[in-house]
Length: 457
Ligand SMILES: Cc1cc2nc3c(=O)[nH]c(=O)nc-3n(C[C@H](O)[C@H](O)[C@H](O)COP(=O)(O)OP(=O)(O)OC[C@H]3O[C@@H](n4cnc5c(N)ncnc54)[C@H](O)[C@@H]3O)c2cc1C
Image (cartoon, rainbow, N blue to C red; front, top):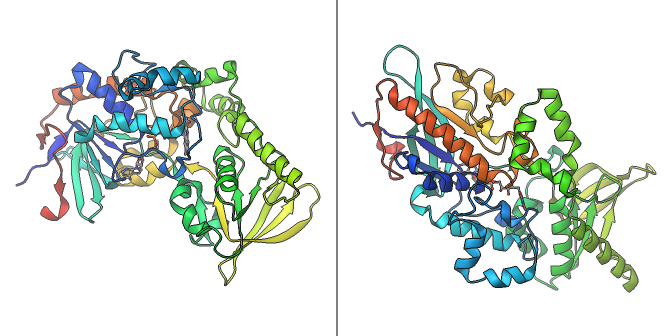
């Protein structure tokens, strides 16, 4: 009988969350024997490539990189990245804590390259199932992870622990999903789709594009459309009365400090929700003040020029959306103050409608019979470990989907350095316990190479 090789941990997704974990595991001498790998669906490392606009800046200090708050002496600091790239003195001259996203992406990629031998790129994890003990105890000691590579081949690997770091999934409200995908684009795919939508410069009539949403991504793509595409007339449609600035003042910013995770976690469910709601305007449906000023100035200057092409439609509710036979998209827009409604046609819609954080539920559905309602309830410990019944031994760590229990920083970069430390500590403790207990059916894997093609079974 062919035996599965056994990992101590498999990371699903290789974005900043699991990248920070890879760094932490590499820097912890005690974790050297921990067999682990990561599975990432993109063919190479990429951090929100669809929104890597040239001049957009980080919304977080570079000192909140993958490691500095945990260990400023790590070789994976942003400062060491600048040093190795030969740009440290020039960066200092910028007098800024906020690099461009393009530069931060290059930093993340620089770190990721150090872990190429641990990552299976181009594989999408499709499901997970429990591996029960061969005796009749019903105990589950490990889980089997299924993935599919770009050639359509199925893979499976067995592990004692999972770190789920799959980020958010583009959220498309039902009314827009019903239009079909053609020229209805979520901002997550902005850069990969916009040239096709706009077409060649000066070819045919001007394109009317509506950007829908009032957050940072909406404002970023709105400005980008107006700057890069002279053949586009852009309308930014927002329900609220104005673009609102993100509150990044210092006392408020303390909610993103790693220590605040303890404060949130210590509260009961209602108080956690209340605290998160109180500080929502740090992260959701808000825009950097400097960007708001750019939008305002752009609109002002075009009114001076007497040729208003781009618009901010505030207090505007979208009541219906239909596709016409010529491909144009018609929106019924109602002014929420006057009550007046009108229909307008657009050549494309850009949806800055945010990200859902529930994809892990589908991914872990195969474990549902073993987990009770812990998964649906988001019942996680302070160490991000899903609470599981006593007979279910594998540990499942959830990153980026614990905002309800761990606070607003959970979906951001702010706590990555410390969260990876907390997960590593928990992982090592768990691995010691697992090794000390009962016989295992699988043989231990020594590194990334393990896994077998399902077709070979
Ligand atoms: C445009 C944009 C700008 C942002 N800027 C900032 C910022 O300045 N500061 C900040 O703190 N936060 C920012 N954020 C928030 C963002 O969530 C974090 O920066 C960060 O990306 C979180 O990392 P992650 O690894 O949890 O998720 P992600 O970065 O989303 O990475 C998840 C990874 O999992 C992979 N994956 C998903 N499903 C599967 C699967 N089934 N199988 C295999 N792989 C899978 C994805 O391909 C992806 O690579 C920004 C978000 C966006 C969209």
